[in-house]
Image (cartoon, rainbow, N blue to C red; front, side, top):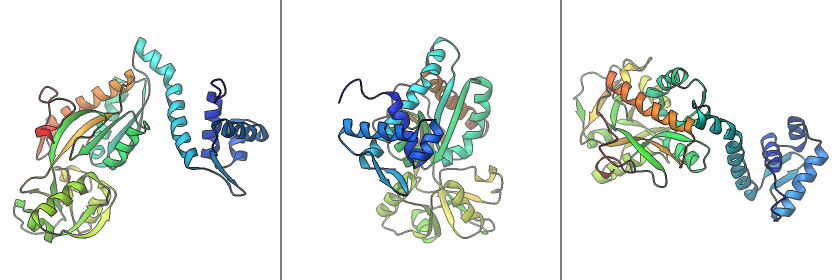
Length: 323
């Protein structure tokens, strides 16, 4: 391929076409004549030697190679768009957009306080928050769709820069009005209860599956859900019990009647901050602020079964006890 052929405009044209789903709509969005846009894409495909787009009367969609090209082009364009902010941040106050991911369980406790603190401490930084399952967040880090991410781990995430934040025991969360219950529940007792469990693949589900398998029991799973909030909704409705990495459920508005119980023997998860490599100063500043905010929140309102992990206590590439 000619080293002078591909330019940033080719990447912008291609991503605009994929996002719009048609040449006509993309042409209107980026203000380029449709025949010229079509000609540019045909030339790009010829130079690459592969088809990037499936064309039909219903519109266009990326081929398998096109999906890879779209992912990489998007990443390159994002980095280019951030160059001005990166240079300005290097010379002074951090500024620019930071793409932050958080597992839904961590977001419930820390997202609001981080947003408030960022507006005060980092006024020139724009946070783009994405929440979801930890496995989904890790994939976004790997593809560089996110700059940094706070995730729940049962084992260390490989291939990333990693800073453990705290260790948290999983708790059984019971519906309101369940009557008198013991202060702790065994794995065998846990398996007999109607449970709402995370949909596979899921970090917490992986840890639970291993625990039940080692104990030689089969959980009574009556439903599977994708989010922390959905699990709490099932519990609040009295339909099932949930197993979650939180000991402060009664502090969440609307969930005051729910009862978290200790699981014995304990099942531990580790909350960690991960990134895919070198960070711009704005992302570094957000990382430092998030670490500080987690410490402050847990000092003011400790979570049951939670233990902070000081940076001096262990190497940033490993979790407590090598977990």
